Amino acid sequence: MDDLEKVRNIISYSNNIVFFGGAGMSTESGIPDFRSSNGIYSEEYDSYPPEYILSNTFFKTHPDTFYKFFREKSLEYMLDAEPNKGHEWLAEMEKKGKLKAVITQNIDGLHQRAGSKKVLELHGSMHENYCMDCHKIFGLDYLVESDEIAKCDECGGIIHPGAVLFEEPLDTKTMNEAICYISHCDVLIIAGTSLNVFPAAGLIDYYQGDNLILIDKNPNVTSSRARFVLHGKAGEILSQL
Image 1 (spheres, rainbow, N blue to C red):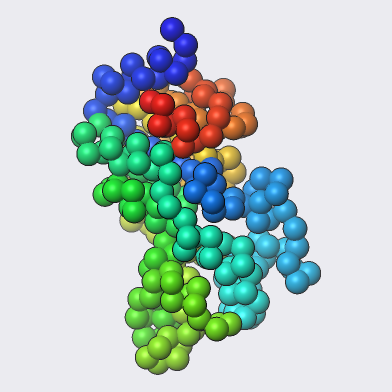
Image 2: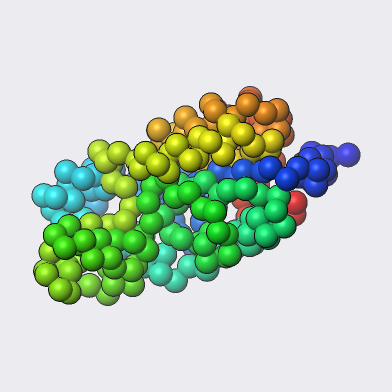
């Protein structure tokens, strides 16, 4: 029996599965990742390092360049993206009562579009952007279609993206809920994340079970902790389970 079949068996007997995913879940839907060799962070933009552009400091001081970069490198891809087979499999597992929660570092909303209901978005969502003055909420399409700096159509205030920027804290309630799900699940499936971004990466330390399943194209620091490591694209492997 190969590892894929063994993982299928584990999943078939569990009704307390949690999924933890990252950018690799969305690359198969056409959204660029951040940290791969040809990802968003691989080259400078207007002489600025991308990680600095995506910081709270840069957003406040250079909102025009921030939005220009964000639209070109990410937002327009999100607008056109569709859920892939991996997103659909997770939604189906939840519908069957086997998957208790999707915990994601992604901000694209593809899990919800695939049908998942319990989705904990650690880094926020680009479908819930807000005016910094009157707090009106705006969708992703409004940001993509805005000229230069995205501004509120009612008060004219600058719109803050729904994503958590560098230097900003993660939502405490979401983090605590993710810790609760991970610490109580029987099976933890991790896919499409390098686990290099903290504090989100530290969540796996709360897993207390012995069925940690890692799905990724390349081995990472979590490989030694995993009971099974399935090498390949996240969506393709998940759809085979």
